[in-house]
Length: 481
Image 1 (cartoon, helix red, strand yellow):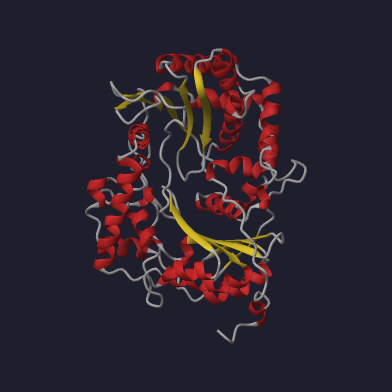
Image 2 (image 1 turned 180 degrees about the vertical axis):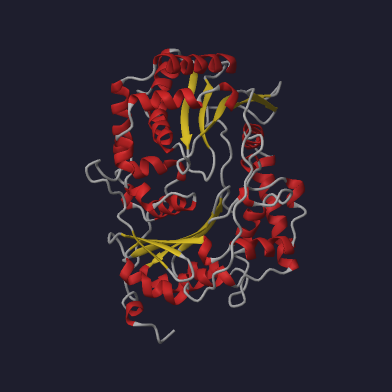
């Protein structure tokens, strides 16, 4: 491409350095909270603009190294599939690497590797994301590649049939041979009575087997459009430098009508659900309980921030309630934790989980956690706990800006679930403003046993002796090839 404009020529010849580590979405709250003091009320200071075709563009400038991460988020995920077609969003994610009219199967990954970069993708219930990290001078090429498959994916029967076998094998490896993943899948299915979050993102096997080229082509044609996408660039580039490139490569992609998301809502729940999975493959028993909870993008956003602080109070460190009481004092658990996940378009969740010490009993673990919840609801939290938890959320993520992928993933996923840039930039102030009364009210609203599903993972009789404790199962989230 010898006729590149000057701003592209400037990108050539810059020394490439290694990209920083990927931050998980479960660290989103800490990642955001830890980047600014409340008085600054700024996190990433991104620049934004929107193309005429509707593509939303976010640029996070970091001059720490001559590298850049490009992420494209499509606002569609497993929860948007037609009933009976589970796994379709994840299936399409795989097929996006199988070639276009310009680049053949596998060439996308080969070219990125040749450029010295790395790439991957992942699918959640609410969005699908594709990402590459490369030296800054390689950004025009990966933009060309990503924009090309936004509009020109080639899907033939042979390719689709072959890749369907791949995702079926992926399911066998990740779910069918993993009792913890099986329990997580069952828990999701009973936690949500009506909402599509109850369906695994990877899909049910019998439905995956029936997915065909027409299904994938229709899904791609309906949802993959620039006006249903977010492009995030994080690294050694400014919005002024990025805009000509984005307009050149993504601007020609035509906007299309995109369906309105229609998702069923949850009915009132009148009874708790309980799942017990017994398997000879289980060496270490574990216990988990998940409650339905508000999400960040919904009408109860204040509760979301309060629940984030509550999770930190309960299990944020070795001085937190659950660890101190169950591990140190009562010596019942080898590990115990709580987690709030509000990064959803619809419902969030609040989870408790624990593994007993070798020879310990799950009923003792459950009784102890029930006592902790009862004490929380009856007596609340202390001002000291609140202050320490908020400070920990800030102090625990001060290195977030050192990553390229972390800020890009945090911003892109937040925008994909319906949050605004201001929601992210004002995160420190909102965490700092959480009060003891808000935490106690949120706990009483959410920790209703009728809104929960409890799972027990236990060894079958005659199973091998207990192994060192690992992480207990939790409801499954997205999948990455």
